[in-house]
Image 1 (cartoon, rainbow, N blue to C red):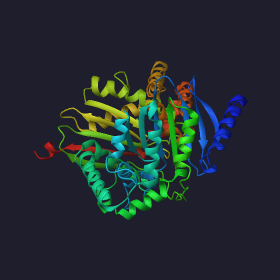
Image 2: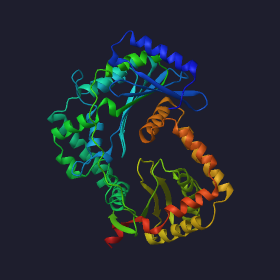
Image 3: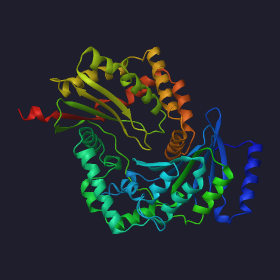
Image 4: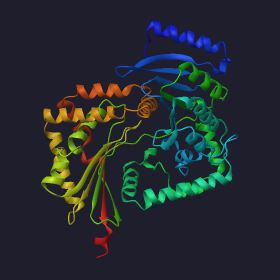
Length: 457
């Protein structure tokens, strides 16, 4: 983080000295700096001797705070035959600890007026608590307790495996969108672990052992692989002392070396099909796209807006309204640490084939590679993209999510505002270059979903 002003630096040095007079060295953080977070707020970085990172952002606009624990482990870190372990821990972490019985964690937070959640994705696992300002001591205690003393024994592991297996049946095996997405990524990626679903393959889920879980927990759930993000109304000194007392004595871990193969360039189009109980056909395209840190990720964001965001966007206007080929068209570019996919999907109207949808989509993609985007389209895309990002910062939870995400993926917690500035600087030439780089048919995967009703006639 950049150098901070002398007055703030001196103030923080005094604060650290005050804490050091009260607590043992293992519980005293080092102050690493501060950067602006928007026009008013600042995010400050602290690091404890065991490697635990803390990002604090004081905001007293409401008597609440959000406490996030970002673990730098996701499905990209899993080995073959052990897919889904990161997601399984999203469930296991709510179980028993040395001091908490089954259900106590949720009950104590609910009694304090707090709410909690968790999520797992390709690059991270995130745990969230949103609470009234007076619950800070309780939240720190509970979060540190489950990191330090989670009970990984046969019964809860078996129970949560069953829960995850049922979740997979519901969200993937019996869900058209889930099954299509899984097939798309499995086909588009050959070597990189992004090819495996975050929830895991069913045979891997069923095969997990308690020892697998213990090894995974020891490898990744160490303080030096964790970033705490706290945003809202809290006394800074109290937060630093509570975190130091609760986490400071935990030993740092020897983190595994990430051992993965980068995906080779795709040189020819790949195709796959599914037959599902859907009344009409569906189409999903996946173009190999940029990583979040790629200089052209912002340009692809704006291309997605031009193509598929709102009634005035090109593909929605053409496929849904003008040609009446589709009932829905969507697009998405993965915000991942490594290059992911640019996805475009469409749901056909009755009697329309996936191939007919593809022909119209291809026509628009060739056009966006051939002709610069009009200035009014670019301005609308810039406004919509900026609004979508800033709207997520209305709450303490939204701010903490944004800080934790960009810290975990890029190491720059305030990078959201860098992206806004980048979007504002982009020109039609930038979008033209990005379209020509990424929207090439030979580097895409096409998944067609056929109607089971038609197949049976």
